[in-house]
Amino acid sequence: MAEPYGIAFSPRPGEESSIDAAILRLPEQDRPAEIAGAIRKSPRCLLTMELFVRYYAAKVSGLASVFLPSGGIYLAGGISSKHETFLLDGQRFMRTFERNYSPHMRKYLAELPVMLVRDYSVSLLGAANAAVQLGSGANA
Image (cartoon, rainbow, N blue to C red; front, side, top):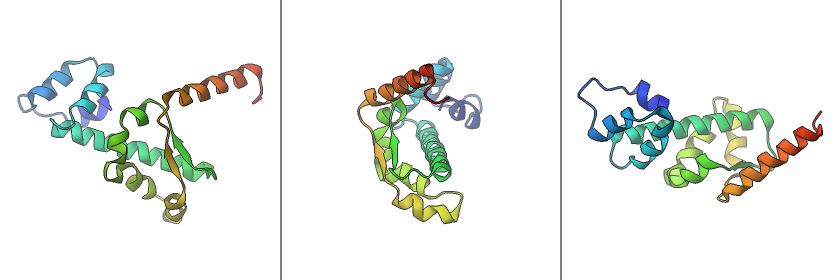
């Protein structure tokens, strides 16, 4: 999220707001939380979040088009839990998710259940399970 904020929307010197100037002074790894927290105060932060959600939805849509999950998509982890309201508001995520680059996939994607997992520990359990299976050679 910090990259589109800092690069694609670089204002000319002196044109950034005090919020934007403060965010740009932060180390890059600290910017995403500040950008998300400032979406109601900074048009630049709002636009950055909009672009981030579109990119996230397009990537998930592309993966769904490749793997064709029959049980649906489960959005879990920090991104979805931290930005739930923004993802759901006005169906931001779903609008882009369903508008796939491949027209013949749009009907499939519109009917595919997409669930937002609110329990953050579920994603950690999934990662732990994958680590155990990889460690035991179960997927070899």
